[in-house]
Image (tube, rainbow over all chains, first blue to last red; front, side, top):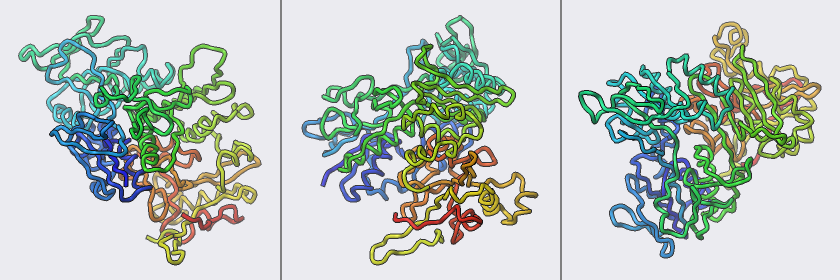
Length: 425
Length: 163
């Protein structure tokens, strides 16, 4: 009976545990996590800070999840070293865990650039539950905050801080916030909503230096932007992005690019060693290449695929792509695939923009196949379009209807529906 | 919980499960499925009260899709390998191992819309509150789901399927 070991117990680790147990209910399964209670939803930490969700609500699996799945959960423990020839994982207290099949699901860690003064009290990153808990404690005594980075994490933490009554300045290096997942039009719509909530958005700038308070230099008192402007604040949240946590595999034969390179079965180049989630570079079906896509739903799916294969059930990762659903500041948005295509004849763009209704929809086509989707406010047909996208359907015959309010499954021809949705429905 | 007449298949602990299927050739596009779904998911279970007095008006979880001359009603398919369950950020969307139903726990839902993004049928909607999602629960308290029972032309069928 194989012995499975999983390092990391967030989305990918949870997905793998569930898949392994579907196939092999009894094999020895050990999960190693640095966190005391890892089965929580990381994307929800902003809801904890805002007060929208209590700790219990953040649990994405039941309290007894590990026990019920027959998992030996080594929580609050760190995997420090791997020996892939003798097949063991060394832990922080000098002990070892042997494995037959190993999954590396160590995730990502916040990228913190070198900023003078970043060691001061009041500077936070925002990735884990403990980040959120520490930040939440400081909010009562704070008045102003600077969020560095206008990406997903930056926007989520900004909303939480605004809800708690703080005055927030969001500093974004690029010209627009959320520039990786939105085009300038959609980004501007979000910026308007965020500005109306009282947030000061400063784009084209970053934080050059973090200053102390006059009375206590080791405590955050403000930031200096690249243009020399001074923004007084009590908290600085660095939300620039995450980078793969690959330190565990350094010195091993596991191949990496920026993250661990995996095939469609989530296997690394070393046999019996798998990787999934934010640490792995998995297949992007839109770009046709492997890349980092640190997104919760993909991590969980990748973990599931790894789990099946580890337990001996062949499963192939269908590929993911950049895909985000946003709820922040009550402006629902879905963004999938390529949203800012290079100016090129190869791409065709369909747009419906009704500013008076705060409605914006955009589809990017390449050779009549959908490669990008942006929906602002009217999001409910996103899944049908995403399904066309995943199946590389030529949409030439009905492309003008894709952005219509009435677009639905019924718009598709019967033969296309039969093909895309096999079986009865 | 009386889940849509599940029953044992004999010796093994295998349950039959129900699924709704649409017969588009019989659908007249009358929309009664939506009306009865709305009523079934209302506080009062009364059509006049549900439509006239309940604010906000309860939401139908079945959607009549029309693209003339085609029409059919669609609701959550309770997919075997449900993308919404894998994608759910909060654990609100779960696959019930026993009944095979995809269940949605509104108390756990944070309205992140990720399930809407990945549902290939477009069968998940924002709730009237705009804070959580809503979808078909196969009327688990009824023997036959309200949309099926109310369809006047047999365009919705409840069929037993093997898990």
